[in-house]
Image (cartoon, rainbow, N blue to C red; front, side):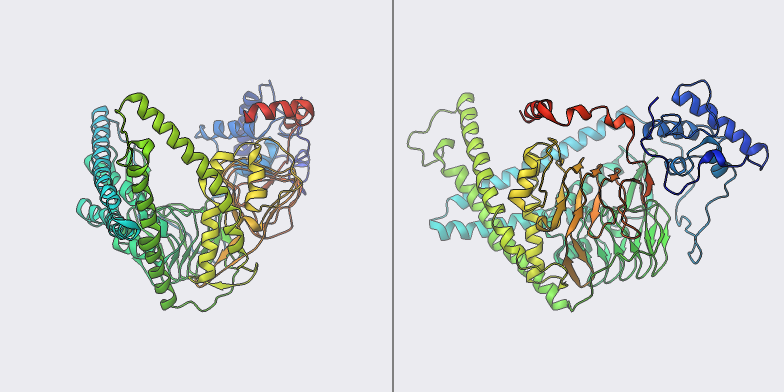
Amino acid sequence: MVRETVDGPPGEPPESTTPPADDGDSTAGVERAFAALLAEVVRTERVAVDSHFFADLGADSLVMAHFCARVRKRPDLPPVSMKDVYQHSTVRGLAIAVGGAAPARTAPGVTESTPTAAPPEEAPLAGSTLRYVLCGAAQLLFFLGYSGVVAFATTGGYRWVADGSGASGVYGRAVVFGGAEFLGLCAFPVLAKWLLIGRWTARAFPVWGLTYLRFWIVKVLVHANPVVLFVGSPVYVLYLRALGAKIGRHVTILSRTVPVCTDLLTIGAGTVIRKDAFLLCYRAHAGRIQTGPVTLGRDVFVGERTVLDIDSSMGDGAQLGHTSALPRGTTVPGGQRWHGSPAQPTEVDYVRVPAVRCGTWRRAAFGVVGLAKALLIGVPLVVAGTALLLTRVPVLGGPDDPAPRSVTAGALLLDALVLSLVGFFGFVVVGLAVLGTVPRLLHRLLVPGTAYPLYGFRYSAHRTVARMTNLKFFVWLFGDSSAIVSYLQRGLGYRLSPVEQTGSNFGIGLQHDSPYLSTVGTGTMVADGLSLLNAEVSRTSFSVSRTTIGNHNFLGNYIAYPARGRTGENCLLATKVMVPLDGEVRTGVGLLGSPCFEIPRSVERDSRFDHLRSGDELHRRLAAKNR
């Protein structure tokens, strides 16, 4: 029999000592039903009501998730969550806990949340193959038409730029054409939104119809807008206002996920929204797109990797911690701190950096300088370089080629191969050299733990370090292979030594605020999607600090790990777990959920492949994987 290597949550008395249920046939019936369902899942004839799920029955998280799903399909039984299973690890304890449980009550001092505009659940709409095909065809035509117009204008512009006389002539034309195209790409989504939609209102409409097509066009254009490059700048806030969002003064938005139904978004003055937060103001449900408002008061803080559903709101001074969600209709009262999915009250303060002076003039100057750098340096250099490459390189048969060749399929393929190889390996060599020097120099301007004003020179240096070192090309190139640890440690400055090579210590979705303040202990393995939160942000200031993950940890997918996270060595952090910021340092346990609760660190099943973790077999398999 396979058994857990550790028992249930610490401090929980043995379930076999639980007295028999005394609340009548209701709990007894639930107990019998649970025992029968669990016997089917673990494939045994009978399950004793005081047998421990993990230690006695040999179950694991996947088996118990199957059991929970079976229970949910029975309308005559109370629903069971994985948290219930881990906290009450026998049939009898589980039946007592959920069989006669009263509905959840609102915490003292908290106003109960009720849906503000959530109608009764609607039946799913019947699908239509004809509408599906017609909508897809219309989407394809729009994509081809829009891409064709942009490509035609860009090609003509590149030729015009390349025809400039001398370096000054090429640069001047690059400024004119690059600025015009950049501003056009920024303005067109705003124009399309007001022409196709007007003002967004709270409503529901079926997918694959004309309304959905207009919605889809606006969504694609808004998300593909180059203004997204200005996330974290006042320029981005002005762009959202142009799309209809109601945003107050001195708002800082760091999330690259652009709201779609912007007229339904209200953000009060002084609010901070951290990266990877979702405030889309729409959702897909039951064959419909449902739109609804998201309202944030003044001085609100929204943490990283959060989701705010439609019809949700937060009062003045409220906070929502990282890895949290506000379901539809939820309201966080003013001044309160919530976290979790679904969110619940907490005492943790998520704003940990003191305020400093940061006025309107500083913000305005930062936005103007950012625009000037883009329009006078960044865009012209890209345009001029691309134009010269496409028109002057002999391998492409440009005008400077003394003997232009006839265009054949073989010649085109050869040219493309040569150009791609030169471009790829040239970018790898030059890119690694730049990443190993420029960000390191800029990082020296920042002292960990010191509060700096937003929208200043050091803020710009911090953003440059984060953008350069989070370049996805190299993470995709080296991620999920033996090379990723060398890239992170030697190239970016992570502290990983000594490394226990597994061949996939990190996936391809890794990100951080500062690689030079990121420490991952020896023997730790990361699945994918880890985000190291090295920065703290308030309405006026930011600071950076070291984020440390202990030795011999296992991190599941899509975890946001903050500085001062309260986990130590030998921990299992489950997928999308909310890393705690309070309480004792957790060691030797597993953590699951948001907010998290403790689960067994491992089961004997996990040791079945230990013989592959060392020796010649490990080296042979690593070499094969890398190939």
